[in-house]
Length: 136
Length: 136
DNA sequence: ATTGCATTTGCAAATTTTTGCATTATTTTT
DNA sequence: AAAAATAATGCAAAAATTTGCAAATGCAAT
Ligand SMILES: [Zn+2]
Ligand SMILES: [Zn+2]
Ligand SMILES: [Zn+2]
Ligand SMILES: [Zn+2]
Image (cartoon, rainbow over all chains, first blue to last red; front, side, top):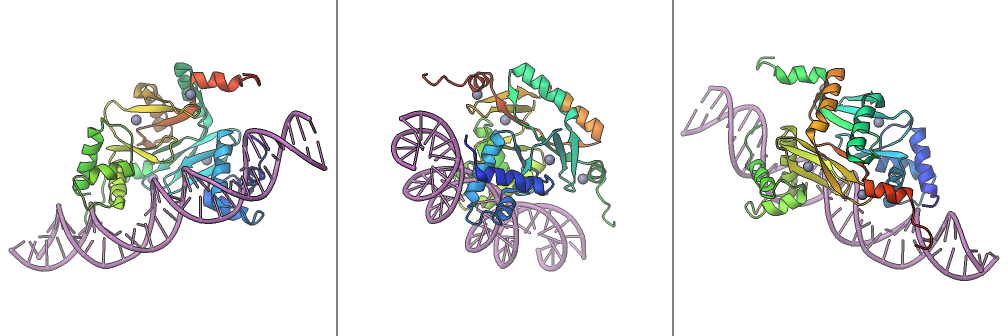
């Protein structure tokens, strides 16, 4: 794997955005400022390489698009509420022991570094178990 | 949410395939046999409903497409090797305690029922840590 | 510097997935 | 049974993502 200027630019863009979750096309748009001739497929492929290098995470967070984020220390993960869309961030300390157990049990080295778990937040649980009365 | 014949047909297709992981378009192709006029978007939307009802799981397993599977008991999850593509199935008992801890800690009700974790299988770990000598 | 090789890139086409909207089907209310 | 309300479907268009291939680039060895 040789050095790719696009990869470096992507890492820079992600860092500049405060390491938020961006879609490939959002990254593409921001990249066009410095690399006017860049193509979307180049961004997708560079992101794929960054991912396999563990520098970037890829996630489906329930929006209709795949989101990318720079991987930093400490690792973090997310709980996404399917009711209201809220995204909670959870520390890796809540996940590390589970990952370690999986690795030991299956002699498998995990690369997943940004877990997304879907469910209902407390507020949405209440709402779904107590549907609003007809006359609300 | 009312009864949809397409949803029932999808569950039937998935069951018929021995509950393997199928893409939306694979399901679409099989559905055309009984529902000749069906449209792809109908399949996508029916799958979305089945998912939110917890009857079907949606997963990105590293192929370029999203895969769907009927949710059965007991639940299962997968480890996908990014080296050789191998897919290991793991029992929910390995995951349940972790999920329970998350639910308790964050008062969050998890809906995720088909976890996909990426990494390297034992064979691929050996290979990547010992790159083939130049004269192999 | 020059050459040779492997990787990356741009571009176009193909695939996959999402979305908007009018129509049809199902359920609920009169 | 009719009407009204709600949800699902088909179709077409848009958007997102992947893939094939030739040209350009980066690296390493002359
Ligand atoms: Zn994140
Ligand atoms: Zn919520
Ligand atoms: Zn499965
Ligand atoms: Zn492997």
